[in-house]
Image (cartoon, rainbow, N blue to C red; front, side, top):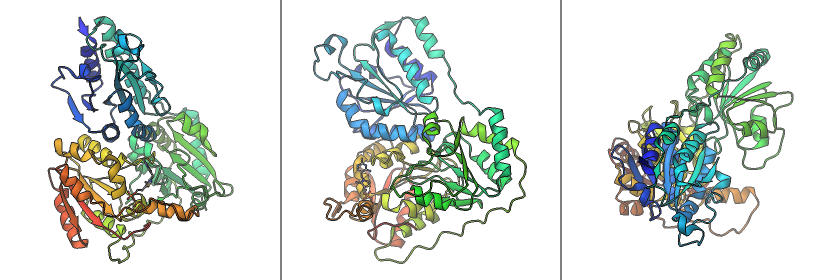
Length: 532
Ligand SMILES: Cc1ncc(C[n+]2csc(CCOP(=O)(O)OP(=O)(O)O)c2C)c(N)n1
């Protein structure tokens, strides 16, 4: 006879989920007893950090990832990060402990009296097992659902006395062995019609979104753009958490702006817009205007039925992005349209003292190896980084699509754990860094060699920009004087340096990029918003 714990770990093993991110409490210790040698437990010191690290790991590995949280307060701490994981479509199987069954009704200490309701709006499925014997099947249900499109977090609450209960091995064996797959290509008739519409357009464009990267569709997107001579835009920066097209490719035109009017204007001149793997569109500031240029048509390919249904314009196919782009590629001929004009090289950053964030990003662009990965959370210089770098490999860019700060620092640790052979740089504002600062401890404890590049402008610059845009005067709480992130990082054991100017920045950055342990470089920059 096997116990619930043995069956549960066998199930995780079968799903390739042998890395678990967690922060334990008394209600989780029975699960962690006799922790198997072939599993790796990654300790985070606060639950938002635990989920953020798992989010980065799940996205960069492409695998559903196990997370274990402490009952009600632990799940409560994690809520913002679970919201982010849902926006990032990160497949997470989140479990949390619960009081022993005999003490739930009397609400003994640490009972989560409505465990499944707590994370409900931010997960695909939220459940508390009715019987101990159901734990393996509930975990299987959650793991399959997290991995099916649209991918995302699921939650299972498990009373702490369940782990030692014996299960029927034959039943558990079925739950453990089941495979469920959900990559569906579009109807061939829809693909043929799409190919015709694309072929008939006089000036079509492609918009590549995060799911091109997540579904492994880079090659198909490049081949389609080349065969059909399509100019390619990246979906708007704030909501588009990953890159779907090489920024150094001659067909690449840049990043769409995240507001209705400007985005519609940017597409001016195109009569057909094919959107692959993005919502339509991740707008943020409300700047009204026409959704599309007069007479233009739009067709989206998305694996997310909700994205397809809620789009304010155009048609949509709910289908796997990679399989559908490949089918479309087979259905279109070589076009004789004029190839798009390549973008000019990045504009040299303006001279400033202190240096501008653009100068920092330009230096990073020079030093980052081709296989380098950027995890970005520097709100007022997001566009400056996108305009200074030309990231051109799959899986090179992660940005919190949900907009909740705390993603950057923690996700960078998870991304590096999933991609140990690629250099990872976390470019982060000194304000943003504080939301997940204890991820630095995990980076040190597990020797995760991320380079943390802290952009110090002594303010919440993006909020000052928004205050202006929203005609808000006199708002308090927008300055951050004397926040010494390098000193804090040293306290966590990270080797940290303050770079005084460009030369010192280059030197410390290049030393950090080759290091085998985490390093932090803090650089003082000019305040304000920076776009180029
Ligand atoms: C969890 C969370 N809390 C608050 C905010 C609001 N917010 C957005 S940007 C920002 C300031 C970030 O400061 P910093 O990292 O220094 O970047 P800067 O704006 O100076 O570039 C804040 C507080 C948020 N996005 N997420």
